[in-house]
Length: 168
Image (tube, rainbow, N blue to C red; front, side, top):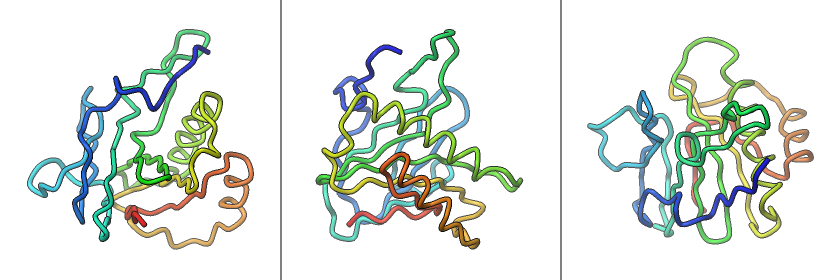
């Protein structure tokens, strides 16, 4: 697999933002995910809460950072990542009622983070999070401590299944 620089300027579609509340949208079709303060646009699938108004950068991954498997098929990656201070957050956005969405979202996050870790040193980031977010299931009720610990041990990111991304 060729080298992929997730942090390259060529993938930055948005400017730095410092709003207290932002929505993350994933429009249908070939457009990548994006952030907005406008609640009248596409449906917010996840919300970024940034009460200290820290400068943050949202970079779409899916439909922006194109990664291909050795056989030529496009890799199934998560929807985006958020960079702030010395922190990184990967998000996978879902808008579904059916079961199975969480395992699919976690797999997309795992694939993306695995590729990221092959190309970057995750230790360069003090805080590392992965959010599988579903606007139809904004809070994840079931205890899944074992799964969360397994994910952390394998990928070195804290898995937080919810639709509210809190910027600290």
